[in-house]
Image 1 (tube, rainbow, N blue to C red):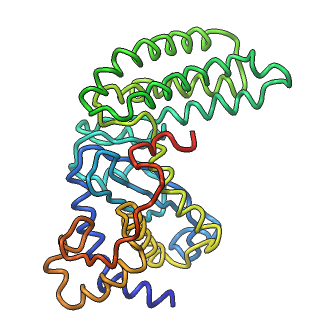
Image 2: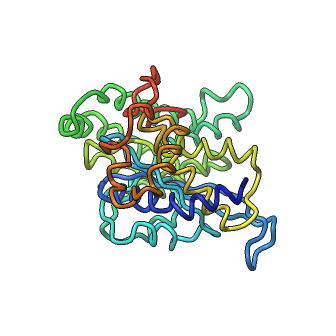
Length: 316
């Protein structure tokens, strides 16, 4: 069965993946993340070594969502650099230093939720009874104030949201940074010191979300996308070969893109595998989300799920 899937990907679905990537790179606001995956038979590496599944996706402002996963044998900075090529725009990421090697045309927007989690972990590491009085508690409160401002501004158009952020969030950010600098000068240690140093280390990129109203305060949208792969990984555990991992990346890309565009993944894949051998590659753009050749039977019923534009606030 695995060979059937791999063969279907190589004969037909690779073309869909390529067209989706072209669409993705027309957007100037993207998200990126990566997670580990195990590949048993990879040249020059033991079976127990870690490889990586990278994900790149459109942001909440996109009319049609595109999600691309890419298998790579390592976590080197050359991977996002090669995938994005000459792309220019805003890229939401975590604090991983590898993204800083991208071209000058890429503006990194680092996730505030990562800082919040570090302060939250520091609170849990505080002596029992002292959690509310700890410096980590103050750091988490700053993050919560900034998230609260974002919830208030969520329904505004981008231009107005940008203006209101500068009025409301800018003073909080300035106070937050001054507090971080003061705390870093004290003899703090442990998990609290880690949270302070991390936040100061990514600060220039962390406050970049103020630059454009389309940008988001966190990268939770991308992490939520990656969660589907992580949950499935607990079941399939590993890929046997790089060829299988690459095929998995393409299948996950199409399935996750379908889900984000209210398409039934099984019906959509069946439609693609019927249409592509008949010459569908000649009009492949019409088969992608938003395309006029997708039959109504591929669409799932409207969901009561929270609007995608609020995805940055999930799982803080």
